[in-house]
Length: 207
Image (cartoon, rainbow, N blue to C red; front, side, top):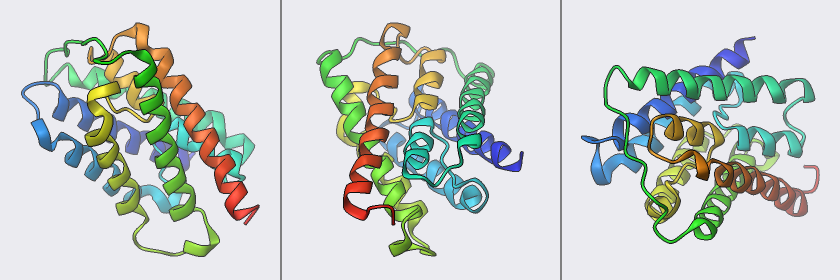
């Protein structure tokens, strides 16, 4: 049970930070820094308990890699998505709902952006936090948080830069993204996580 609570807490603060820094008046150009930092500190805080996923796509990748027991996958997803709902609800005490904008260069570009940087995130998690070659390192939280920051700067203007089905749920509930685009987050992100797990297996075998 404590693993699921840690996943809930970490996901809540990640999604809540997204809302606080993106909905005007937010953090502007520094929003990706704050969001990446929030993930980093939550990974360091809870990684030793739950693995610090805070992301259904990452949990999916870790499960496919064989480092998350079958019994934990659905409860992890439930805790993460529930945290997104609570974070979105909490935002109503702080800010007005955001104004969803159209995808600047279309759904195909947004889908590819979410796939690529969710792949990058899951790839970093698998190699920095689950690999025998990097076991016991102290940099994994920084590496994971930095990946989110880089992705947000690189393609945030294309897709919204969620790279996380829980964040996608949160930003949709907050009005930052339209429900008609929700599917592309789920497909792109879960696909990116699966591809990262496959690539990890190809490079590292069963480790």
